[in-house]
Length: 172
Image (cartoon, rainbow, N blue to C red):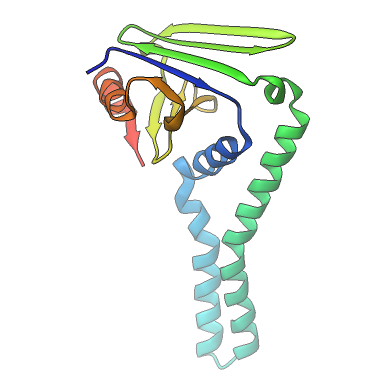
């Protein structure tokens, strides 16, 4: 198993939108089911009461609510990418992971940011099918696409995260 991993990536819109969906549903996923279930039950009650028109309306609202949530999220993500000039211009992102440190360097024509920290500073790590999300706070995370790992393999990196982060690693 490798003890050193490198990732070179860009701040891409597709990964950013995927992260936004993940971030929205990671802690309060049950709240996203509440409106459709509530409207579905109200529709069923209206139908059982002999009121078919309100029942169909409530069922349509129940079916449309998740779609409306995803559409709102997509539009907000696109707007954020357009209005956040600093994020949009940071195209060269370099990550280096070893057993002692997490290193991140982001470069754009006007700004260079560097972060080097120990693993005890990591809030939580989530692994999805396509990416790792390394949260350094409850709201801020590094997006690590598995396809952009240049040194090491995603499975090895996942094992190392499991060893270093312990119960802070969540697989989705």
